Image (tube, rainbow, N blue to C red; front, side, top):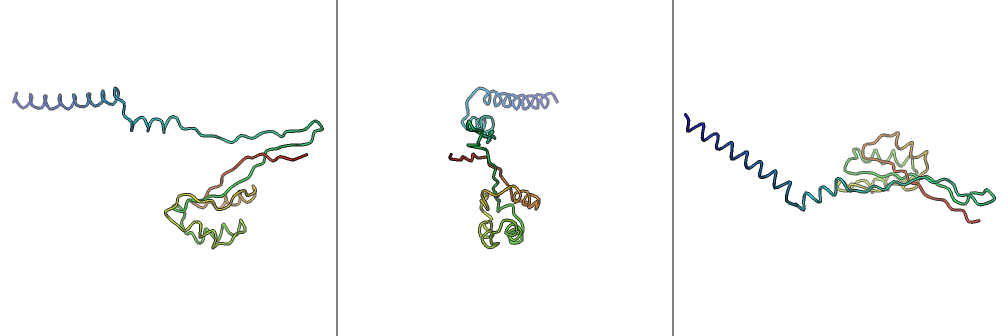
Length: 147
């Protein structure tokens, strides 16, 4: 009976020692895979476009002002009923449904632009469709007027 308890104690002690050794190894040695994972998770930079106020000349005329445009993209892998979705999108943005379907038919692609630089009204209507796999991105730019 004592020998069985002693064997079980030795096995658990060995497992506990291996666990402590592995924890110490992970903490004290550098691992390129873990370092790249750390950099990817904690040191990523996301640049956000900011809005600017208008720039006036001394007579009060606008020289430059911020403009907003919207762009429609799709993730073909997530889109369901692609022909039906292409018809709905075509109706709103004024393109042919065949041209839109040609962009979204490949299920291996993960990102395609469908329409760039739309106005806010079209973007709002497209968002209201709530089609899984479609998204609208807002862009802010400067419109400059030459005096």
